[in-house]
Image (cartoon, rainbow, N blue to C red; front, side):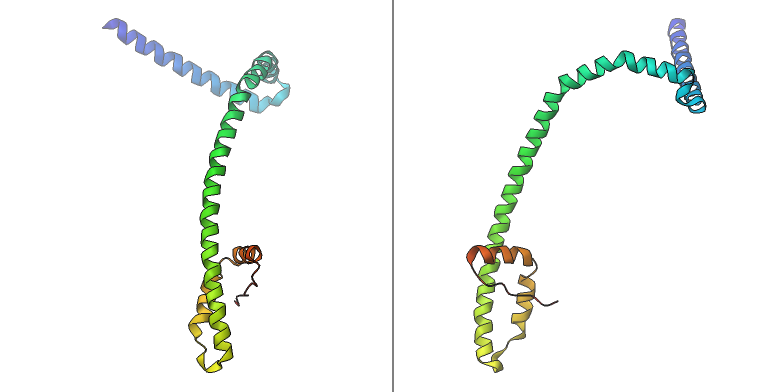
Length: 148
């Protein structure tokens, strides 16, 4: 039992000394800058560990590249699926716009039959004007301009 208490005290003393040493080194480093004793020790440590760091970088680079390639592939597949969904929505919007255009042409032929809901539907369908313009160019249809 006495032995375990000594170990705990010894561990606490080592941790306390390490914290005190790190605070002392930080204080000296900030006061002296890179020209002092601590700066020269840091430069020496960097010159010793630089070959290990470059070797570690060379070893880990293929794994990092593989990870980035895999995540990029997953992102591209998700984006492709989303683009197919968007294309379907744009096709539906184009068909709605065509229906509205025919209703609008009928309403313009008979001004008494103008229905204000048509303008509201055109504004709601024109939420993605760029998407409509793209779909209209793809299907060779004129684009309706939505008024703000």
